[in-house]
Length: 337
Ligand SMILES: O=C(O)C(=O)C[C@]1(C(=O)O)C=C[C@@H](O)C=C1
Image (cartoon, rainbow, N blue to C red; front, top):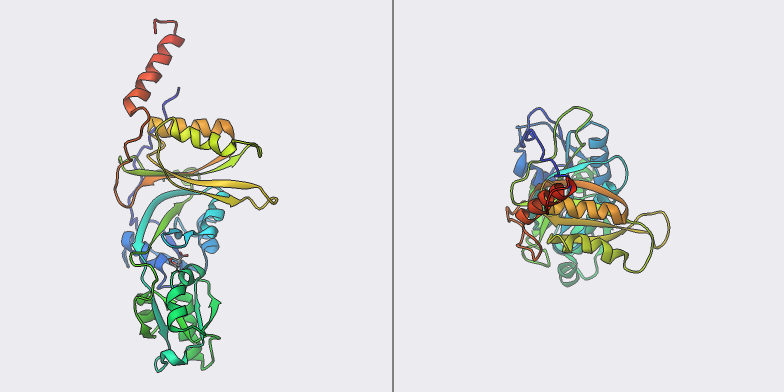
């Protein structure tokens, strides 16, 4: 069985001042906070885009080299816009991840009190994380969705500057967004779940057009992301997919189904597993998937934000994979097994 080559040379680490970064904006989003953990202000050009789709499109079109978007929240789960954006369209690679705590404030124009708040706006993922607090403290309040937590805050500031109404009275946003847009914080730390975190991914175009290597080299504590499209709707199709990981002792850290959009009942599986495609066990699992699936879209292998090495699996260790490969080579050459 062929050995999967490792990425060489090692790609440039972030921040790379020669690259242009894009993030799901405007300024003050959690996505910007995630970006700033790897690309501090002033180290490289970084532009805000108004949605996940726009951020992904900027990377695809070459307006940015690396894009930062949310992919998974510990309370509300997968971010559909990101999962779907990566499953279709020109291929992109995940080249890194960042996990940050998410804490929310209720912010409004200065002079507003809690009793004045009848309509609240925020991103749908933000709303899902403060629903209980709102029900308890603003039981009559109506919810208006916004493109991001920070755009809800920006809308209040813009309306104040224009002398108009924003269509809502308060925004649920990051503390930094309230500060950036000169809003008054009516309530702090209003998240329903202490310790909520969101995982963000750094996206880049695969190597090819500019000759840059973007696939990060293995670190020993990596994650691999992919999308598996099942061949046909038949009994055991998902088991066949899972088997590829189980038999190689590869641990999954996330699996969720997403509709392909073609027809009712057509789903693909968005999967994260532990390890790097350069490791034999992961490479073989991916080859196995390729055999049983209609299509497998490799989304990248990249260092885990928590630096945790793969859990020891019940399957064979890396040496056993190398030994098996050597053995097959020998017997194929007609030598004694
Ligand atoms: O609106 C933002 O600030 C974002 O970065 C988006 C987003 C998300 O979609 O998950 C990020 C983290 C929070 O969980 C809420 C919203």
